[in-house]
Image (cartoon, rainbow, N blue to C red; front, side, top):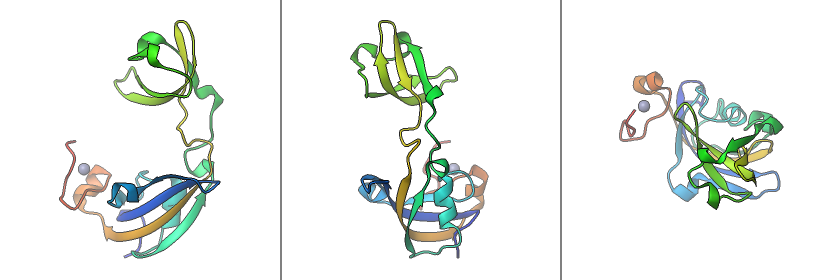
Length: 164
Ligand code: ZN
């Protein structure tokens, strides 16, 4: 079976930046990650590179920022009143914190500047604007099960590991 839309792949990957510095690896967590292809679960450049490949293949792919986490946007710097932060007095430039959103979600942001009553935060993805390299090993390719297709994501070997 070849990787493609509606297939589930299990992969080990190591993500590095353009200088070869490792950023994260699935091997640190031990288990390969399972992804249902064709549903936006992977960045576009990696999904395209997996297309048509089979279990056992190992390859490297370099992905431009546009096909990874997108360009950095300067308008993603926002000035937010301190009351929206949990512990604003502990925050310093360069620290990463979470911000509660109006819709109930949370967003990870980086502190840029701390003022008297407001804090400037960068809401860009930490990897936005960066060319990324992936070393990938395909552990398994299988057809998605009907339940996985209905949910739009891969399930683990024990069936359904999550609550929603
Ligand atoms: Zn599910």
